[in-house]
Image (cartoon, rainbow, N blue to C red):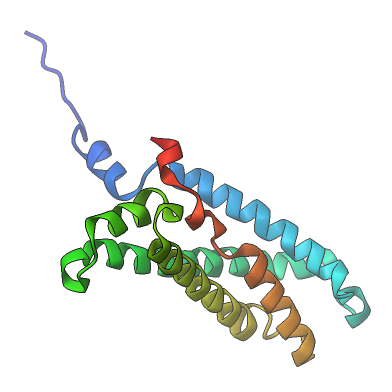
Length: 168
């Protein structure tokens, strides 16, 4: 009888619980949006007048904007995860937890919690970009502030508001 070896038969299924395939689509979409925002901001705030060229500015900022943005999104998601997992600890009703998970617009407090998580993520996007991404790229503080706040407002995780019940 011929023997067959099954390598990693359990690993892929287990891995997908913590790293869903949709994450690749999310990463790509975030990269494209961040790229577009960087280019728009470059022209909007006339960074060409500060002796920067778009190609160098983009190359020196996109990876940081993208990774810090994703980290900030994870912080916002962690807040939502904590609210859901701490249902009993925080005394949240099942109706509220279900609303946070599947349709924030079905419960007023769910909207408040989800928007709070989005705003926390936006604050972190701003801080990361102001203090780290644009620190050595943009000398003028007011211009650096404008860039960081614009990137934060345009790239914060608005998708948290989308009802996931649409996907199921």
